[in-house]
Image (cartoon, rainbow, N blue to C red):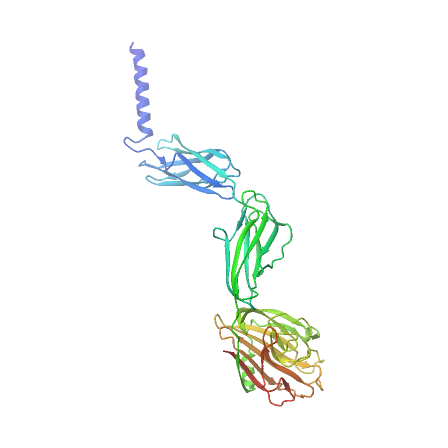
Length: 464
């Protein structure tokens, strides 16, 4: 009998010792912050993360040996599972981030398992169930708010249209979004972007739609933008209400002042910094009647209309609407024939030409200086020649400055220090005129042209 009892007693003692060594009496066992986590509903083009926190409540170190997932592959560990095993100090924690990224409209199930070794190096596993449901996201998205979706262009003058860029985003992660048609209604609204039918937008890519509001009269205007697409989860066509108000801009007037042309002003202005841009130079070729569009980098108001770009012409003028090439035959300002909307600094039939080493190189260049709101556009014509001049050494030097905020225009001139001026047959126009050429101001009161003058002056046009 005794031979049977002793082995049982010994086995019981071993079991008790083992249990007492594998844990600490009265200590709370290590734990996770969740044993059943539900991610809820997540769109198929989105992800959601949850951070599992393992806490070592022992007074001794434990080692986390693994963190794994089982179940649906839409659950993934993004952080905290590498570099195992990890030693976790007493009362310290270890974090593991699990991401849910549903791919379809359905429920998902998985398990998160974290295994650690207790102070007696016995493996222990903690588990948490994972739940989540995928919901098909709307592929079609546009940056317009409101119910119904509405965009208000605000106030625009009858001569100064406003444009707005709408951005359509394909929110789907796996399928293309197709826009098959864009229809604009309303007399004051028009589509400006280069829409081709159909437009295919790749997953998570964008497409821009530019709409212009150009009120023909003083009134309130409404319209719609209707976008036809293939997203089954969004109404098609998707309709955006458009609205805006048309006003007549106040008539713009200018004060014209003049001073004797000063070489000091030329020297002061023409000290271009490292950011100047050469548009044309005679060493690159022969230029006659060419025109180039440049960015002002600021908004300049001219005869009551705001502009951010301007055309520079070889023929000695700036234009805020496309003058086209040519326009070497200058006219009395204002003139309703093309070009209109011009700032004529020295408008004439000018050429940039290599004279075989005689004289300075012909150049037209510009630069924007200063910082907002006090930037300045400087444009200059240097050593250029009027075709009709009687001698080859008739080199012209002149420039113009456009000042941000004040919208002041300053024209300045000088004679070459190397060559004399011969004014025969030179009749350059100087002045400014509005969009339609119906209103304008001459630089020389009572005379449309700089004609056979031995003394030039600098001109300043200041808007009232």
